[in-house]
Image (spheres, each protein chain N blue to C red):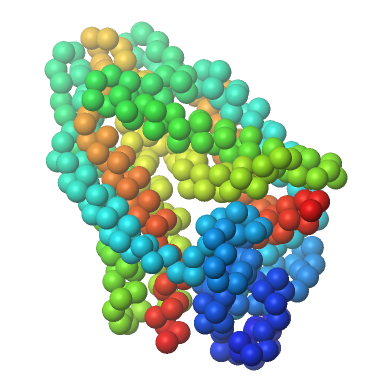
Length: 214
Length: 208
Ligand SMILES: [Zn+2]
Ligand SMILES: [Zn+2]
């Protein structure tokens, strides 16, 4: 329900403001499976899901395993004029390591590998204790805030499209073989999208608050 | 929330003399510095938001110019090196008949960045000036900018993949050009610009 005028407002603790447009609402319990949206900007406010926590952890753990596989298995192989060249994810990241383009190496490594890994690790750290019925781990709030702020900078899915474009570009001059690491990476992207869709930020913050013994 | 009946006039936390958290939605009395639920910094409206939006947008625009002038890729085949810019790469793809991929690269490296510059500037201006677009449409525009902007990074990834893959010594090799750096910076700067924007400002103008 909408809060109508300042005179009849309950205490701030019983209210919530839409994070995107600041519309004020009186808090009410949202049942699992239900999705509460802001009336004004239609942004999702709360979307609690049964067993969401366990599912996110399972997806995060599989994402972690897939990422490790993607780093160590061969990624792409190229054959031209009887010569083979094998490239791993690491080689791709290090492609910018010469001369003026060197700073890009760090940026690339961050966008493709480091930031996604930090996010996965952070989510496991925040949610695992709660999924097993314990109180949140120490500094879980800080960890979750960092994980959320890194979200736009995890670009694994964009990288996958980049690989597809690159394959078309070299198709004329060489044979390309796609290694197991590439498929691990594609799977990682799917798992990441699923995982992010299970999460509603406000719901998670409320859960963190309720589980924290004060 | 969604179950409210008749669309009552919306009261904002600001109008009620309170401060809402942009991370977790918790409402606080004015004067509280950090959110008691999530620890995020609290501000009724981010007053320096627009300055940062303009500064990052300008920086993004400045580095976007060399990104288009200088070569993105250096291709060496049998000792002969040829350079190609972002636009040159698109033309090359069209020559090979890969129209779909040419469209993806053209969209990600030229259409998205330019529409993003215009969209962010429009949104920032709309906070201080009266504009025709409704607050709801502008909110959707902002969401679109935040969602699509990151995809411009595709071409930088393509350059990285090609450079690591095509290293066959004399026969053929591909190396990144300086434009890859300035283009990556341009994408990053405009992403920061969009993130600096306080989306609640869109609705404030509409409300009064
Ligand atoms: Zn809203
Ligand atoms: Zn908060």
